[in-house]
Image (cartoon, rainbow, N blue to C red; front, top):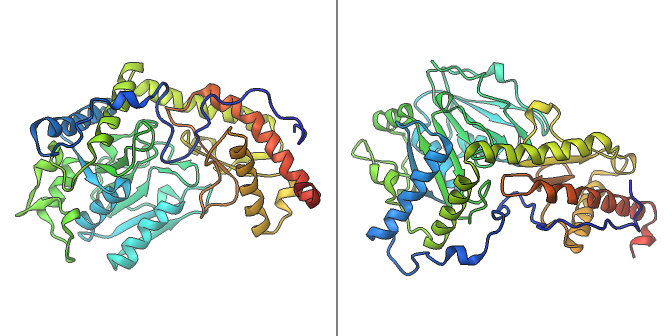
Length: 395
């Protein structure tokens, strides 16, 4: 490990490694949004066409099946997931997979807000997946495809049968555009603009399979549904939602920004290139972890390691011997040192996760910036270790 006094010479050209909102695309400038239809009604012809364009470009880029619906919905990915839970669940039992903060949140909503009596929790600690073989597909299934706060992803869709009886609802906010999604194994997929393509916050995307639409049109939940969650009217799907007729007023500035990200993705080669860029970032960190004794991935199995929300744990004895509160303080100190140097912003682990680091590796992040960051992680960790060994040195 580099000494505390030896700062690396090379800095990342772009120090933004936050896991949401995430880094803007390479070369982004505000001039890219000059054509935004500001001061216009989102129901007017041109603004509505821009909203529809986001839908069309998104589904094409992702290779979504032609018979799926895709709509723009309020309240980011959270709003999209909640719409699915409140509108679709209750028709049969549900299995909920929880292996990080957001999955745990969906489990809480299902048990304590919707109060479903037949809800089964399949749980695993941070760094692991629940037993996928224990999932009962005669029931509905709710999961995060990629654990944004744990750096753990499901490895593939092989464990999901195509002839399932229940619906599979996947929160894919940090997976869409960075991981291959097996559409034939899924029924609801959600994400937000501010993740892999670096868009602005506030809007979510809700994708529905024909099976999900059939559920919506044949089942009415026992609980009242707020207007902002309603997907049907008179027992029929509200088709306008999936044509750019949003439930609430969207930001046309954010819409323009979303289109900029989609056009960039198309220009560089589409989905294969986006996936390759994310995997290259994970590979760069994996090479460094392999040769670095003080750090390891939080995700235990290599095939389950996320290439977007890359979560790391500190394994050095000076750190693991600390009390939990001291570990948390040291990890925060490490992240703050990097921020004070202007080399990495917002890479502390999520507040509910084990103390450590979380580095966004999505497609808008250049691998060269990841590689430039890594020596700084060595430097900052050595500096914090020295402070722990001699508290006076930090003063």
